Length: 302
Image (cartoon, rainbow, N blue to C red; front, side, top):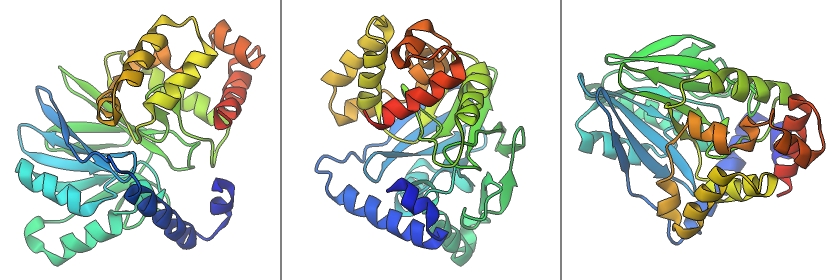
């Protein structure tokens, strides 16, 4: 299905994807709408559930009350949470062009154009014409500000060619928004890229971030990812412990497992452990790159 969508014209592909996610969301009886807030010294992150299992994130500079929204696929909900939070929302951080992440950009942009009291809206993302209403294309190590917060862009092509992660570091706290590149105990499918690109994204770039960096991913896939990780490394105590927590939790509880941290992912995420003999043994490979490729193929069938 995904391969077919990639061959279709972008607008048609987005329309079909939008219909799929919308219908899928209606079928979820216990779909969570609760906002979960992480209060830090200089910033606040509000995790907003969307669609079936997506996350949108409102990032607030505590000093200025300026805010940005990561992947606002549900504009009504975004504006509601921003209003309730008493913040000035004028930036969109798009991780990639897929509809369940960038599908709200156009509608949100139109609303800002129609209401001058909201101010201008800047939409950031990788340099990709498939991202609607992109005003500020960014690449590796480009920076932007959310009030007094400095955001560094990390280019992580593979899931899509223009995928961007957004990293914020203050003296007290560090966070990264990883879209569909890095999930809790998993990674995105290699839709438009190569195993080498995912290796570079996970091992060279994201693994280099401080271990205490909070990881805010694009979807709630914790239980399935941890089950796969436990299959690959049944002796990994950290993975088993987290899997047991996820098994006992309801959907809301599993959502509460996000954010993860870079340190936790290094201990439990098999895609960030491709140098480990135990992971290589599972797929019968002897190099990290071959292991990355074989591991993704195995996960696709899991």
